[in-house]
Image: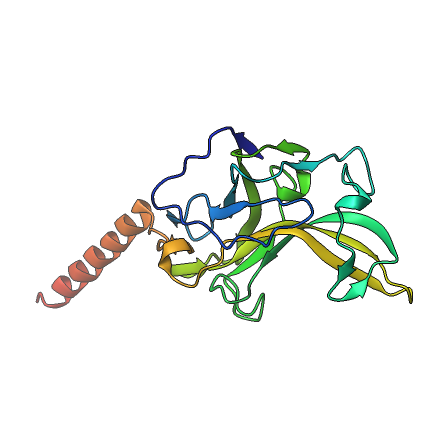
Length: 230
């Protein structure tokens, strides 16, 4: 995680869909840190996002040394999940999310996908530990895109929506497991203004191969020339 103290963002940074006020009201926006770039066919792609808390937001805290609620109190939690009342709470859980409408993978990994998604273990949302205050900004490595063993085909690939948040898991009166979001942020958009896009460049042919090909053409020409003599 890279933590920043200012709220300023580039003009091209488009605010994401903000979650409804939660418990407490953690409010802000989530955007792709580097929306566009060109990559090599065999390059692992890092998907960084930037989370910015509004000046009017409550602080966002997560204390990894205090499971199962990690610094949150039961009084902070919602009383129900989709209308089902919580009888007890089990734990607070960090989560990430993405849609399957991207073109890096086909329907989240069908045959023919050029990439597979991987959840990183460093600088990730799942390793967050500390407090973000109102106006703070932090960068998180949300996912890594691993190219096919033979390298991705040249072209432009896009990811429209990714997100992160915190939820609480517990039980209803019948012993059923239920879960409700405490807060969540998405890079929600379906156009180029807030799309994560990577152009995969064709694999260049090494100079030695060009020289080898030129030499072969020269030999063919020389052979044809000799056949025409005499």
